Amino acid sequence: MASSGSPLRIGVNALYLIPGGVGGTEIFLRSLLAALARIDDRNEYFLFTNLETGARLAPEGPNFRHVRQPVRAVVRPWRILWEQTGLPAAARRLRLDVLFNPGFTAPRLAPCSTVTVFHDLQHLRHPEYFRWFDRPAWRLLLAQAARSSTALVAVSEATRADLLRYYPIPDSRVTVIPHGVDERMFGIAAERARRRPEPLVLCVSTLHPHKNLLRLIDVFARLRRHRPELRLVIAGVRGFETAAIEDRIARLGLQEAVEITGWISREALYELYRRALCSVYPSTFEGFGLPVLEAMAAAVPTACSAIEPLREIAEGWALMFDPHDEREMEDALTRLLEDEALRNWLAGQGPVRARAYSWETAAARYLALFQKVSGRRSETVAV
Image (cartoon, rainbow, N blue to C red; front, side, top):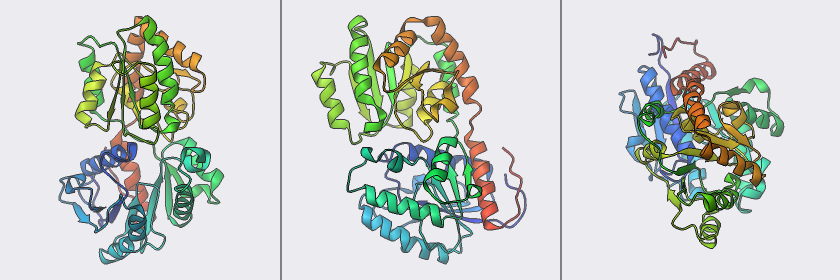
């Protein structure tokens, strides 16, 4: 609970959010808002949503208000235009102290201080993963947000390094605030201790090229020659590489062994974590890597790519492999599948490591940043 003092009027720019369509940034925003509601009952929050997003995005606390805007996020040019014109007008009308932009982009002429989150800079690090007609907008809008925002949040040290590498901004404007982990995962860890997992390999991932799922499917096909009972479940938004992935599955005759769920509810995801024998995350590029953290919290033995920032989260707590080396990936998964003692050790250690990450801690750090950029004195927040 925030201490006494003049409450802030904080806007939350959720115009980018398409429920079930933006992957991890949706989980981030919903988790952060829920944590803010738990620790802060004083400051006022105004959630600006599009026509696709319902009022349920806003927590039930009396200090959270849903402010629906007349724009659809799926019509991206209209959404961007409204973000640059209609949103600043609404912020001025509501006399906001801070406008929080959790999805990369921000209005250039906001009438108040702004805090913008950069989840990664993939559009600059790996432009080949973007459609050619999307790249100019990504470059223009994110560069503008980096220049005009009062403060920037990087979700990992790796993303902070990229911000300072690509944009001429002082390092004092960039704050690293890691994500938290869903508390339900620790309950799943306890449940897993009382049940026998299925021969199921779980990969929680959007179906985009950088997630490296084609290589994973090739590796899984070889593993299954010796373990025909194995199944692979890929749970996440159907992204740009969906057709190629489905074609590879069909070509290898794995239609009965590989399931692509698309975007699923949190309850359905919890059930997959309960059932899985192990988890794999073969991505070639990440801004944070929340599925790795959640799998460890749920005591699911995990193998993941040896890249930053996954090293920052999981090195020493999960098996790691070069995502470009199929043999290393196969060896890591083989160890998980064959070595029960190793699985048990990783299952015991994963929740210990994951406890270092908390959404309440992240929310308190965001709140302190909102207070700082607004010019208010820092207030104590109990977490």
